[in-house]
Image (cartoon, rainbow, N blue to C red):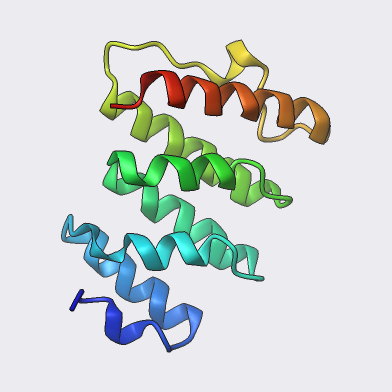
Length: 130
């Protein structure tokens, strides 16, 4: 079984700490826990999860980070957008991706504009994913 499987019934702090430890070892087996934690009621754990997912910079994390850039909390959106940009630049160094160009601003209070920009991010991902 996966190294994180034994932590799945524990609390969010234990789950995230275990997944972050695996990320530090460049072990992607913590990805499912981090993805799940993106919907935690605590913005603190959602933010930590987004940051940790971005460290791995593998295609599997991109869809979860795209969802996280729509979070209601500014700190989560900011962490998720930073993680997503880092992952995309690592995965696709020769393909241009710019949030500003599509109108996404994590700090914007205009949820409609952010939503339109997120749809463009999703479209970019669908077009460019391997």
